[in-house]
Image 1: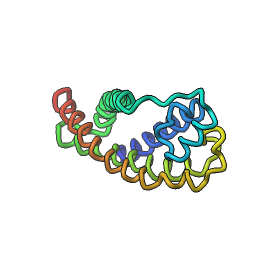
Image 2 (image 1 turned 60 degrees about the vertical axis):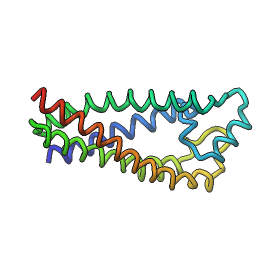
Image 3 (image 1 turned 60 degrees about the horizontal axis):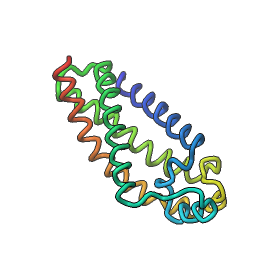
Length: 165
């Protein structure tokens, strides 16, 4: 029951954090929007520069690794609260939480909120309904990549659970 409650709390906190950051700075998430939306936004706002692919990949990797380290710390505490005291329980509980939040991100945030809520759209692209929905396939593919990343995070959390508790 505690794990179920943690999954709900994690989805709420993750959702509020992501949606809040998009509402505060949509341009920070530019690479997450559909290519047609990015192109239209950049044509309307030439003051925004797109980094070269090498720089963008490095920044993406740094962002993902930093996020994963933060998630390892938070998830280690969460699995401890849910009762995990060894590697297997830590790994399984972590992966369950990761799985739930990952697919919450895909289906609720990416495919529902960000495609339909116009306040989350880049300025000048609010009318591009079809283009925003065109990113749904990418969101699902990203969800599967998220599951792979989740395995690595769950291994780290399981290891820390074994060592610390």
